[in-house]
Length: 524
Image (cartoon, rainbow, N blue to C red; front, side):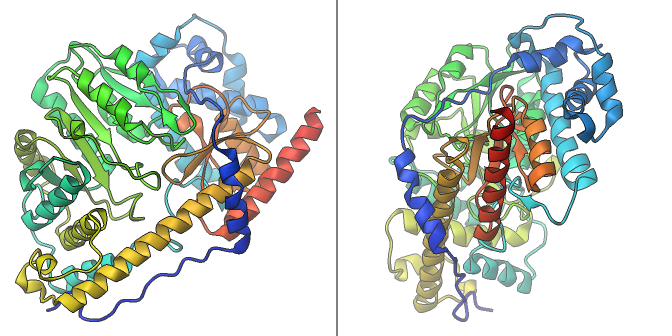
């Protein structure tokens, strides 16, 4: 049975002229952008101050939602929650530091996150007429998995490659990932022993948190989780060990690590950082990341979630990322438009991966085996792209085992297909992001993203992001994602995802602009 026995179709990406025109205006908005800080404000404190039990995350969630409903008047969706808020009184005066170190804070945000998807967006407020810009992932029908990678899944299924396997993944796939990761960091040479294949980024961080805490025992200092951040990731750490949230400011696409440096201690056991933030798309500059990594105690492990570090400037990674106490997490969810496949990998010190093998074997056995060919091909072709390979030859052919039945011509055809589709896909996504940013900037304050497909937007008139989501959904039919769900504790910023069809983006921005204009007239 042969891999790539015939030429594959190539996905076409439609970019309307009006999107190109709007994207051209984005370059005029560079520099001088707003400063974004997800710190605790008075509105956040008031919920903790009014709770009968500030350590009860479910009461905190009810109070937050109750205030939103109380302020919504006749538009309240759950009047009984509004009554609970009105009946509440100030019982204490908590400080921002108490909120950032409270176990209840993380669980409260996670419960609000659950409520948003389960009870509001896809529950009581669901409508087929909504324009969904709240998803945070690429529209698979517009920018799906490259055809070459789809063929790898078909091939694996045809060969019945879905049995038990190594708990860290098939060696050939791990070798391919190791070579790809080595090509990304000058002077670093990974091998299969540095790689464990995983079931996506969220599962990777959850299992790593459990593994790290269980192997290290009780910590004398809290784990540090930089914010903004994704609630399931932070909750997976906070449910296992004491945790402190560390808000990082961002401006002009650059996220500062100074608060993390200030919070570090020699006793810090674990740090978790998204190298590109969700929802802002701001990234940590490589020189700042090096300063942070060099400041860590040798006993401090840091989880670098690199999943959003794409669709931005390409620069060489520092060898500091390959230090013994650094664990890097990658997945197919964002970069390759495959969140439902739940596949990815971690890159770490060989000794840690060897220990993780036993953990994986005990707790989940191993990742899905029919994705190994996909990961192997993806990693090899991505390495060729990184290293500037344009035409494959006998050297590249020898990287694959003979049972694939490949020839140089068929491999070349598949690689050109993959590279061409990847480049066209990335350019169209960048153009849509720039166009969306430019359009939104005409009537809102926009945090220009440096990476990813998400854009954080502050519309005038809102100081609560969840209420902003509710009001916009009701009045415009456009679904946005509240910043509070990613630990943005101040202001009313919401996230929009630009990787949707231009038809939906254009219609959604028109509706938001019209509503913002009406709101300005009402408050003028």
